[in-house]
Figure 1 (cartoon, one colour):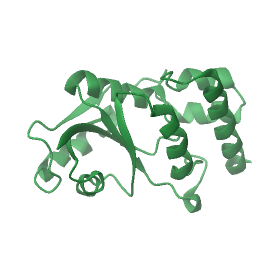
Figure 2 (cartoon, rainbow, N blue to C red):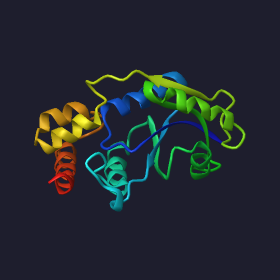
Figure 3 (cartoon, helix red, strand yellow):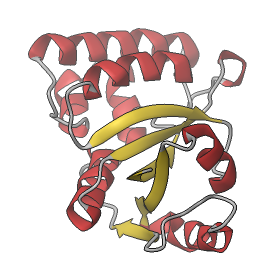
Figure 4 (cartoon, helix red, strand yellow):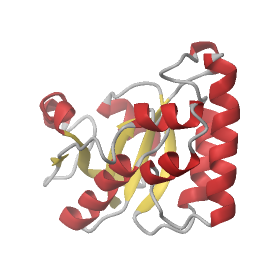
Length: 182
């Protein structure tokens, strides 16, 4: 079984703050991260969640394809550690969950599901301090609405993104968010 880290969220959109969690997990555990994306179906779109999970997985899959810090992206229904372990299957064992300060207390309770979720003996929750500079998906969404490409690009990770893909990402997400907020 391959040990991995996980990060859980809707990633609406994926920001530098999310990627900071991936980097910190790598630094602490020297293991890749599985991004566990909570499902946002078309029927549940709103201003805070303007992108379907399917759309984001397609975009992020391209973004992270060559990134050694990211193992893969999986779709989940909720932040249920036992269900997540079932989804990632027998191939992986969760060694760490990385999150922002606001989620540490809740996610630390996952350790009690060690047996059911087949967590690693050294399972831990890794806290990453939040900062308004790089974490705000709200700011990223606002930059899309405002047609502020420069601000948006400051908020998304630079990882392996060609200029073309960054422009495509901005255009694709902007077109979608405008359908929801206008």
